[in-house]
Image (cartoon, rainbow, N blue to C red; front, side, top):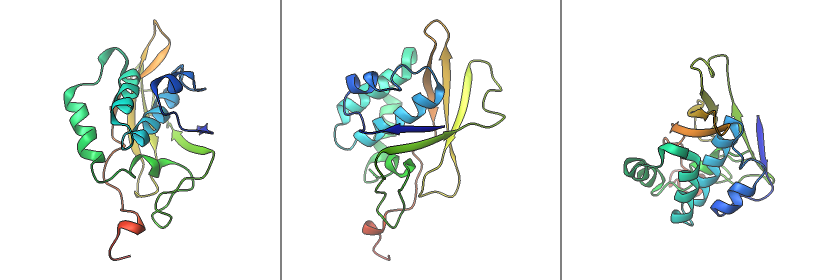
Length: 162
C-alpha cells in the first residue's frame, strides 16, 4: 500500500490530523513511524511524542528511546531511505509528494490482532519488518516492534570512497 504525504507532519497534532492519523490500518501506523523518525534528527522531543502516540497503550520505554537514539545517531538518513525516489547516489533525497510503500504478505496476519508488515529501504538489499497490534475497542493499530532502523549503505556525500 502506498502512503502519500504532501508534507511530512512536524508535530503530534499534525500527525493526528493527517489522512492517516486515525491509525485505522496497520500500514498507516507503519508509515507514520517512518515520518516520526524523519523528524527525530530535527526535533527529537516532538518525534518521541509522535512515536509515543503510535505505541498506544504500551507506551515508549526508556530502552526503546535509547535504541532509537543509538540507531539515528550519525545516521539521520535511515528513515528517509524508505521513501520513493531515494538512493545512495542522490543522498536519500525523496521525491515529492513523499511516498512510502508498506507491504504485507500471506503471513502478515497469522496471529489474530497482529500484523507484520514490510518496507524496503533504498539503502538495503532486503525488506525490513515492523509489527503492529490492533486495539479492538478503539479500532486502531499500534506499533509493537520495529526492525526498520537497521544499518543501511551510507549516502554518497558521506562516503569517502565514492
